[in-house]
Length: 248
Image (cartoon, rainbow, N blue to C red; front, side, top):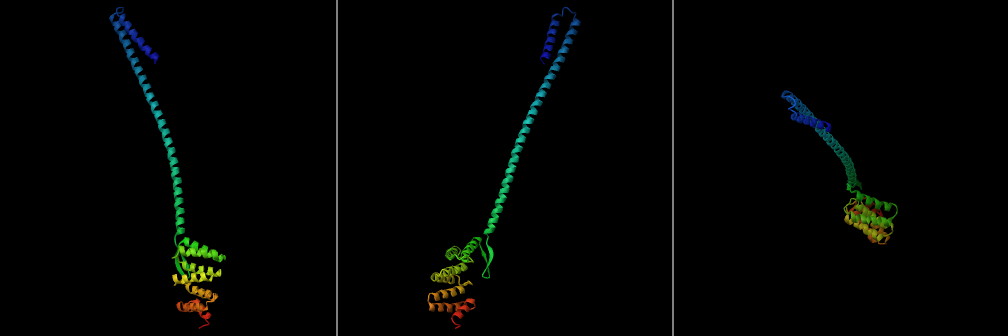
């Protein structure tokens, strides 16, 4: 580019020299020489401008290429972030599904279920079912003191449970198994008072009579047996009471 510029300047200098020495040549030759140099200068000027324009175009192209590369890098970076976010969303979604599945399982476990108690169908919560089963297991294992405590707690906690009458009945039996006739009588009397329609009520009265007999309260025992036959005449306990009274 510098060489080209020098060439233009040299031609310009030659043009000036020709003007200065115009007197040496005749007019026609001088004019032709000047026009020729002028044409060469114009041609060189056009070529110079063309080269400058080409260089500007190349610079613009390079700038566009650089901008394109930067844009592609930014797109790649954003795509990476999107992939990370998508992965995090998938993980979070799976955790949420697992959480709700576990929650649903737990809630279903807590939902009341239908059970049959003394020939009757009843709805029982899982918590009271577990509490009752645990108390009865203590009784079956012969841990009568622990069974009495567990059964008493059950009745206090679930007074409206379908198992409440049974729990009260077995509470009396737990006391009786420990030869605690006084508390056994009280427990069975509570059953008759609170749950008079329970299938366990006739047996509870029979147990009361047995405890009264052991306590040498014979008259009270006879009275209880007569009340049993009167209140629950069609029960198996009433038949047993009649037999104990000598069939009278």
